[in-house]
Length: 93
Image (tube, rainbow, N blue to C red; front, side, top):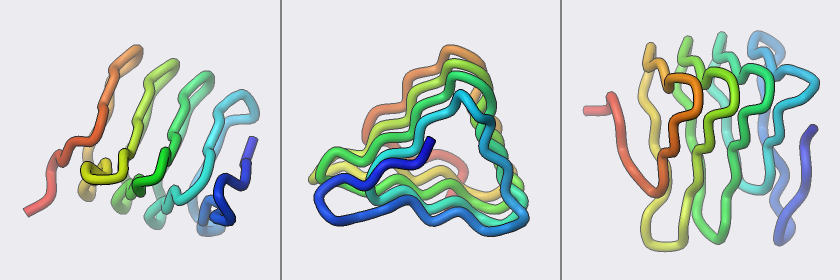
């Protein structure tokens, strides 16, 4: 499900996959070929979430961007099942 939050909607390219039970909320931007699997939540709470190209957020993971700490996930990164990424940078550089 894609939800608008504070006037921002998720951006999902045609080449990306978002499972029907995943949630993207607010200023979330997915890269080309990225995948968000079942039960995963990507939420932008006053901060952005960027998922790079060909990256995967696996089942039931949470990725949260905050005002002073956006969540920046680089290209070809795998966020494992049940992971919690809160305002962090991974695989960019």
